[in-house]
Image (cartoon, rainbow, N blue to C red):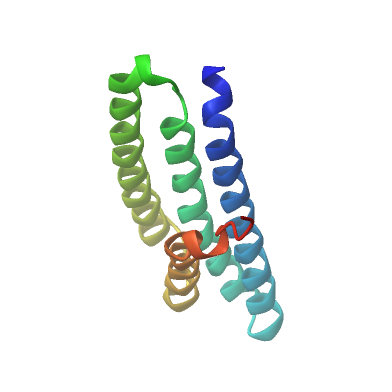
Length: 129
């Protein structure tokens, strides 16, 4: 019963991650075709940074469920958010220092994935009454 309470949230998180991943792939392929392969790879890296960090957050956020685990839920939520920020910083640092990336597609695709995350409540409105 307790796991059943968290199941809809997990499903929404999985659906959001799939939407973000799909959008990143489409934009990266579009940039690779329209501009050049370097832009496509940079777009893939930028979007991949956000999607990966968001997936780690989702795993941590839905690790526990139920009223008895309220303290563990809160702790795992904050741990997930901290990990998300640290992973984002680390991956951007690696991308800037060790890879030859184009900054425009890298940042635009990261912001696209972030925008999808911000607009997620609109995507998942349930109009069934």
